[in-house]
Length: 139
Image 1 (cartoon, helix red, strand yellow):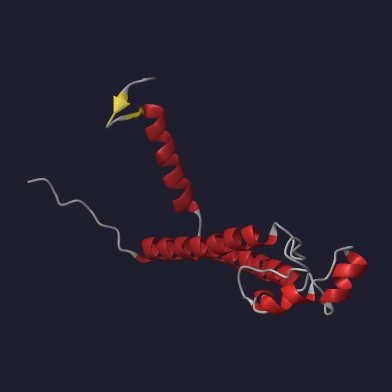
Image 2 (image 1 turned 90 degrees about the vertical axis):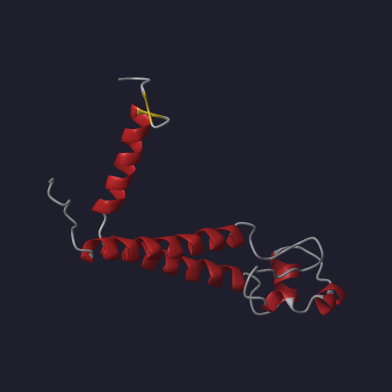
């Protein structure tokens, strides 16, 4: 049966697709909601980590902790950047950002994970409450 094509797919590919569907259907809506809630907590923690990475006094953080030159004219021109909700930026000057490089990609991934798990929980709940359909008797 190896290599035999069924609807353009080999038997192994068809079995993998069936196993993936079965894995999804075995998961309960509670599991998807729990993963979504944990991802949401991770999203909030990551956002706070990035938002507060500059500390309360950005000039002091730049010069004393990071060893970077604090450019007041650059900050005056780009005064909206540190207060943005997304993407997070808090720059000392044009070339150095206090927000770690990994924060914004992790925020995007966790946001997609939250939404995806909520959709999976909704689909699983709909599948659970949908009445089972039976085939009509053969005539």
